[in-house]
Length: 122
Image (cartoon, rainbow, N blue to C red; front, top):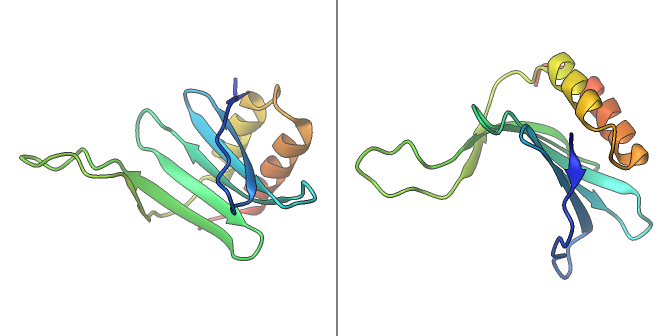
């Protein structure tokens, strides 16, 4: 079950954000000064092949795989980076999200769920 992370440090000058997570998902949601959702990043499949779907009000959707910097034989670990990834499996991820997000703020879970359903084949 996704739960809200407490004591999240807000960054001065950036939009307010909230963070939710479990073993499969990390969800970061950004809000404007009127508490309207202006963006989110949903990282998923954290234990196997982590990817992320980002939605921002001004720019729309982006789908990435997270290169954790670990797969560099003979070299030190690099910083994780986002790299372009293929198709977003909207149906599967939205269904898992709906099930796992039942105990978080209903306005947030409903908003994100609807955006996940809207996104097809990035």
